[in-house]
Length: 519
Ligand code: AHR
Image 1 (tube, rainbow, N blue to C red):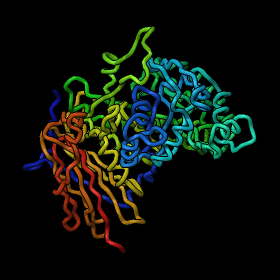
Image 2 (image 1 turned 180 degrees about the vertical axis):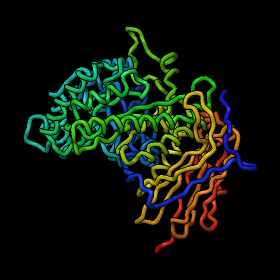
Image 3 (image 1 turned 180 degrees about the horizontal axis):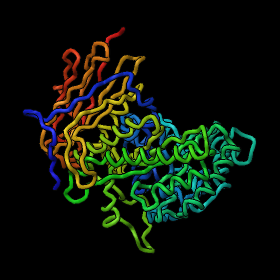
Image 4 (image 1 turned 60 degrees about the vertical axis):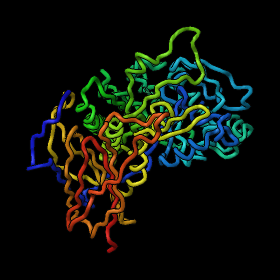
């Protein structure tokens, strides 16, 4: 195991220093940073958000306990319906009278898709949870025409074959979907219809141009790499953007992290990888823009991010066999530990630190499938450890993201070299006079004192402070013990003149909300 080596020690407890300056603005904290992702995968839709036989099901068959938890989580736009699933999906199967909808093979997850929940049902669920719809089109087995058909069905008011079909199917108002993904992970050999960067760039550009001809209001996301560790990473982005630069608004990034072996130190530093990934994609996009002498900037849609024990899926859960096509099997049902939640919180810090260029992000996923919310059929729904950093950050991060220039002791990691033990970011909303500081302590055994200079703010008062930590970093919330882990109030957070101080427990994520005196 790689143990932290403190390279700059104070007398007793290690300490870190930063300052909160409302003028050190990175960019606006856009609500779209707190997006989610619902894929037709495993028990996400069926036996997750939708379970008509459940005692808590509403008149439409959706679990009201899950709806309440999704609202508490505070999720903005939700990407749908995949993921790998979308690359074999025929959207027409999922609309119209339910009794006529076909059962189909879902090759991505080796399952059967019943199409009982489709576009209309999902949109009505989104209204219940208060989130916006973000759609992905299939550029795996399908092309420009099918993307146009779906856009017409979704966004044209009436008077054409497809818009009238939507009205006949029960939805008078258009769905008015503004954000569209041009396929999913087309760089991945596992993707149905996987293509070279040139092939994908061409079809993405053609489809983007046509979709904008139909609806110029939409924002388009072109597929970037499915991970910064793909062999084609970098070159993929460059080639795809050379084809699509003038026709898209955003390029996607996807990243999943898991602990490998007993290397906790590297795992806790996963956000270093995310930081580098974002910086590299921004640099590549700006390079393509500069070479084209373009005034446009392409931003990032980080539309899949999370902790995912993918190795467990690959080696244990993966379904195979010509007669094995289950409906809603248990897939990707990772139970998250305290350490996972601390890394998760640090990934959110990374996203906010890049809010100048990360315009949108989607936590992958929401219920049962690598999810902050778990359910049992006929049984309870509960919050995983990762629920808490998401819910707190979504509720407290408002206004502008601020660079806090942390001076931190460091430690050595096998994966990322020398890494700061403390990372963080602040936000401040001038209008309400409220702000928040988000911090992570990656030290595996010691607390760290943090001193934040607040002389650039008017008189500061702490409103609330929470730390997610536990003496057992492997503790989890599971069916038999659903409330085992919760954030605790961190009473060490205090203001003393021009300093806000807080002690961060070992392996912890912390959020502190404050307000400043009115001028
Ligand atoms: O979120 C699970 C899967 O991860 C998605 O379907 C795919 O896009 C990615 O590889």
